[in-house]
Image 1 (cartoon, rainbow, N blue to C red):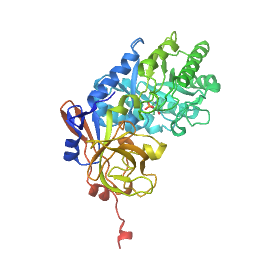
Image 2 (cartoon, rainbow, N blue to C red):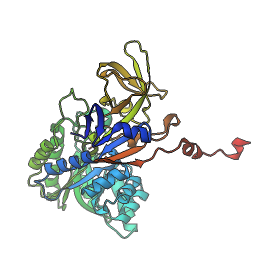
Image 3 (cartoon, rainbow, N blue to C red):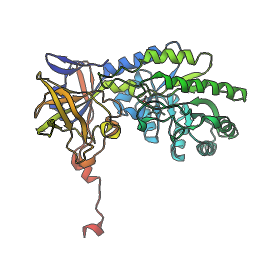
Image 4 (cartoon, protein in one colour):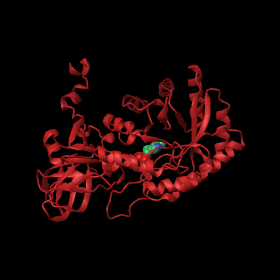
Length: 421
Ligand SMILES: *Cc1c(COP(=O)(O)O)cnc(C)c1O
């Protein structure tokens, strides 16, 4: 459920007409709904209400905008970060270090030092060499780092290959079969305090079975680790729950279904459970608002050329993602169209032969469910300005990231004298 609705024939976000934002800020622009963010946090928390004090750490990479993070932080979420930059963003947005988890296969010594200085809740380690490095860094600071190992359970998440992370051939985690050896080695490292187990098998999962299979393996491992004398206090079950993108597809399992499954599977684990939801919190809370530049004749269907492009919303070209595309003020008719951006790449295609509202030049269109992995993946490819972002709450709205002038982009480069002369 979201808060992008038609009122008197025009799409509004909460009480604000989308057209008013487009007129004031220009297009393309990302628009986020506070009411939807709040609702999703509430639904997710409610789904886990039978657990004792779970840590819900929002996956910052899904939407790192400061205003979004501050909104989620105020609602009590922690943060799952995958870089020093995300760590600093989360802290700047007011999220306490004690609610921050650091994931990722390539943490550098410098990033480890930063996270230790701030005193984060947990590092999710992904290899033995990483464990050794973190121990050394912690010792050099006179500290012990709280850690979990992310295990690779070798289950197929059944999602797009580029967002699957839990198969043995993926780069993530330590092999499940070698976990006891890896934990024993970690325990011998004086700079580490081994406290948990972590797993995250992929994103946009539309079936609970692979998640359950992974969680069952986590539960079995907790038992074995305790037998081996480890004091396991946390289990981080990652993120990955899918959201509806295409209304013609079956709806993904709800947070309530997910929560019921977790509550059942994790019964008796006797740990603090942790979660790293990204998409399910922010996905439906955002739309990319764009204007039609022109409509061009195509061989089978017309090309609707919009002013948003793959640099603004990469998901369709990166992993064939499907976004609903709606006219902000539908004129009534529907027809097949190809929706493309202006970037000079055939991959800059949002939809082919899409049955959608008929639109013409200057009309506004909204790419729905663009709140997750949207603005965060934007680039300046084709020397296009980074996409601005707007946050709406009720009848209020604010630009929460301005569109930088293209001069700033140009001024960022420098031409050495020996080139100029
Ligand atoms: C990306 C990621 C998440 C969030 O995934 P969603 O599908 O957005 O919920 C959580 N944990 C880790 C380790 C990730 O890499």
